[in-house]
Image 1 (tube, rainbow, N blue to C red):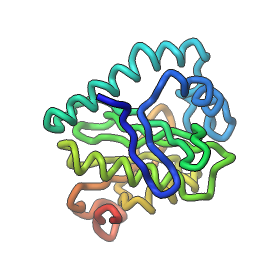
Image 2 (cartoon, one colour):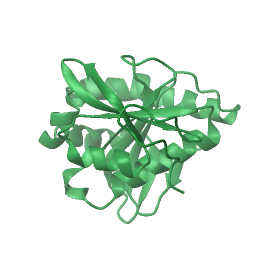
Image 3 (spheres, rainbow, N blue to C red):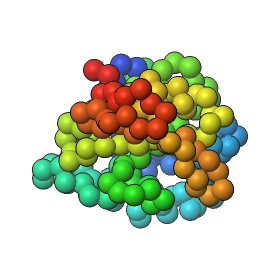
Image 4 (cartoon, rainbow, N blue to C red):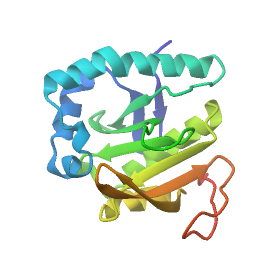
Length: 199
């Protein structure tokens, strides 16, 4: 099995590699990213251990499951976002089960370097991963969470077709909770109806 990658308009999504460690660590220390993803702020040695012992091996298991029929269960997939023109690691787009929510809700998590914001890269990454999950795995429903004051993330979520569902309390924070179904959703609280992912 070769290195998994997926081309989007301006970016390439690629499974984590050890060579991404430095760039990923630097991005995780950006104040704008730490403000919204504090759990990603860990020492570099911890990040290296996570990547080599857990994240890269689990990516391999996820992709193997895709090849064997798409039954991914609770496996996680972690992809780096790379500039198509420079190859630079500029962010990440990941999916996994959110323990605080009831399965089979699978969450989308993403971040883009502050130097590469407002170019549509996050939306391209999320839309690309959504299509991959719905086309190649048994995923039927996805969710996304964002703090109400994280306007940039809310715009990405809504642009990708997620529908506002409710608010949820996680770790003393109140998040906006969005859902997206493979074939649309039944309206939830505060919505006008479900939408399918944009083509």
